[in-house]
Length: 460
Ligand SMILES: Cc1ncc(COP(=O)(O)O)c(C=O)c1O
Image 1 (cartoon, rainbow, N blue to C red):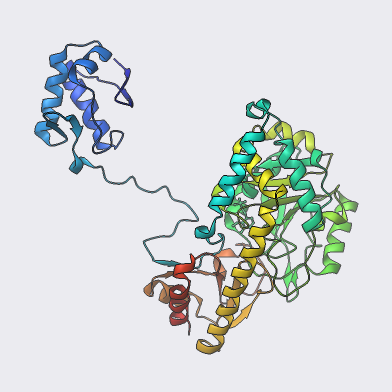
Image 2: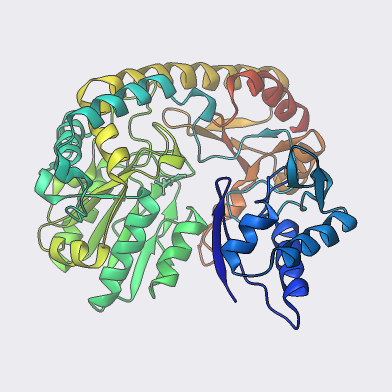
């Protein structure tokens, strides 16, 4: 007998099975308490009302409750009814393995990939949500266009043209839950069209390479030399994934002649370029490097994200898709990001709140970067800092053979930090060099000084 019951605001699926009803109900309740579906302190329905819901005798329920009270899983007190006992709290569920999760409980982190989450502009975001909801037409709450809300696509097209030099028609813009989802979708579309290989930079994120692999594409590393990625040499790959404005994780910009050469090659051979513009807004002391897509919107898919400028938890990303690819992308993509987030971001962009937030964040991160460079010059003069003209991370070059021991030493000082080697494509033909990839935007403000101190202590 499986029943749903809803009493005192509880809505729980119970499945009392087994030889006897009392035993079945006791087991089902015990299981609900053990797994945490019934949280400590939860008030259970009276035996009369649960019996009525389940269509069984009141005594059966009263007996089951009594058994669990005797076991210490429930408490029964005059006047406050039967509740789940506090000490019956279940052990927290084992965390699902996540590539971004910090192992153990180190208090400090310089893992690149997130901005300072404590600086998320909650009040402004809330204001934008209110305004967006008040102005939204009724049809905004329907299934809608798989490309996303027109308000957001228009706001993004204006913003990307103004700030990143993207040639963005709102009709060709597709909103997705983050860059990673856009990449997954594109890889699946490419695979369905017969593509087999995606060329990627020699250094990059394994999660992105894995997405391509899961979509059925083989990833091959692009050659790399002292001047950066030789993007124009993708061999026979069907598509190329690049981070031209700010290579992740090494930090340089793709050389102008290589930008032109790879676009030229794409035009001649039909190779598709996927441009990862993950942190293009953050540059400090160099000229802005505009989007590659501007050179040829028919052969470059531009992908952007709010994960660095606002927060990765929002899962807001976008792509500007060449017209020839658009029908396949929208057909294959299905529904996109929730409408409230979309409309809020649209309002955030058009009201100027996004620009203000990015400007303030840029200033704060620039100060951190400067503090990092100063601290290293003083405390670890043998460590060379590179890739600091833009973005939210720096590469700290270490003496040969020391990367692993420095990462280990950092953990002794309570700091999680990644070595460069973990970002190298397994087939990359590069001479391994020892370095740390330091995401200096990651710590909250209050932990920044202590995090920097832990880093300095770990360095040779
Ligand atoms: C190189 C690179 N590209 C893209 C992203 C953004 O990914 P998403 O929008 O899926 O959060 C990140 C975030 O860590 C990144 O490091």
